[in-house]
Image (cartoon, rainbow, N blue to C red; front, side, top):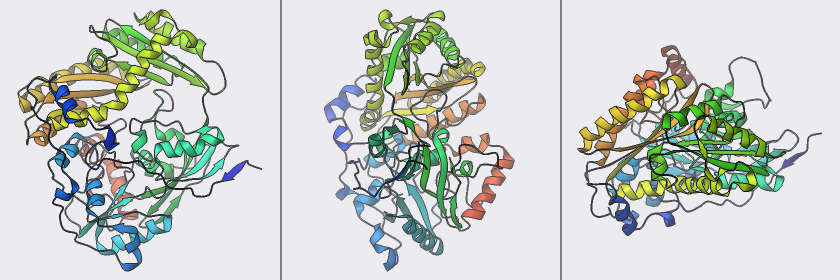
Length: 542
């Protein structure tokens, strides 16, 4: 008999979240620090854009009302509407700072159980109300902003009230988890059982399991199990046409996978309410090291050797010279490779030594001159410096936005043979687009977030001074140039940020036409009224 535990619902815990910017409002940069940052960007604004109060916002009037039977589940409170208007892309933050909330939903729903989701969808379909599924609002691709303007009303459906681990199968190392579970509280519920999902995107503290599944999020592991797909055993999804529940299996060859239909569907085909997720024993053996390269091409070759070695490090982050300097990890035009290994069952020092030896063979110099886990204090220090900068980056981006500094990030993946040309093209072509839009030179940095035997997943950061009041138009021009460059070099429009509305033009060009026809057919079958997240992935009428 399986060692299976049923968990009773616990108290809902939700962290404070900024309505206008990233994460914890208490971590937002003060005006003085915003100005200090902007001083490093020639031509930036001299004063920080003030943060408007919710009381000062002019929200559009509420156009619809829920029936009496659902009234206890919905809110028209200005704070709820403001906080559910946008995601966390640069253009979202800037519009919020300028008090532009024209896209605010009419109502926000907070279902507590699956039946609530069904009832809300039934009402919305009958009333021509668009439904925008909402996990924790961390989308950076316009995934939760209604732009269609064709429905009688808009309902943001917030799943945060459905965030519990419902059942654990310890023998099979899996758990049935509600989709609204925020990263930290999901892990907190697994920790007493010695288990972990170990999926840690940058948005971990402010994103949910359902959001990870709906966007095919990339997580902790830089190699092997890179996406949430790899950790998914089965899904339960509420659609306007009925509930889809797949069978939990370790593997199956029975036709196309039903889970694959909904993984990455971004709330357009149904609302994920539960999932069986594959878990792991919590790691107890960990080691890390950092390797410095004088030449970035040599560092890229080293990472390719690591990715093709079969050693599968948990962490394999390569920072180009600009990224290493910006993060405070290294200067002098040097690149830094951060390596990490871990295991729940056996020491990992030997594997780390093999990885560092591969990097050394390509001209790398290990920081601190040691590869053993117990002697890599300097290497660990560099890794920790990068981790701290990584977690702080969204707050820095918001601080720069308050100073009208354009800050764009885009990520992709390509094959190894195409990467050198893509890297040069981004600096050349996106740099030219920045000059055309802003009249200034851009700082363009790159890091690898994930790597595969056949190619890397580069993540680019673009920083340039903007003009107050024109930030969104400038950002849009730079984004369009980035999407064009990725398409020209046969790189994906997104590796792990999803498509949303901002990446739609690139996605429309990337996907095969027969597949587009199949998606439209699935949309028509599962959401015939076209109410679910209109404008994401495809047009409802397409």
